[in-house]
Image (cartoon, rainbow, N blue to C red; front, side, top):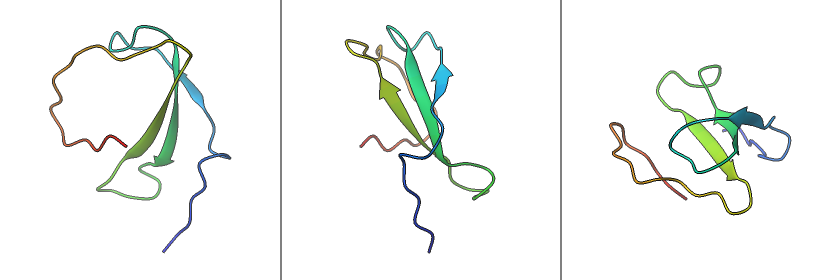
Length: 62
């Protein structure tokens, strides 16, 4: 088991037409830790929201 704290993970700017404004992305579990899972946290700026979309993969939204 490995404990991963979100706070120290670098926030990378992420620009995508899926969002109405700027967001940052934190890679909690990436390819360096797992070949099968990708866990990322999306941080929304004030007032930003996501647009309606269709997801091709399985997503868990917390």
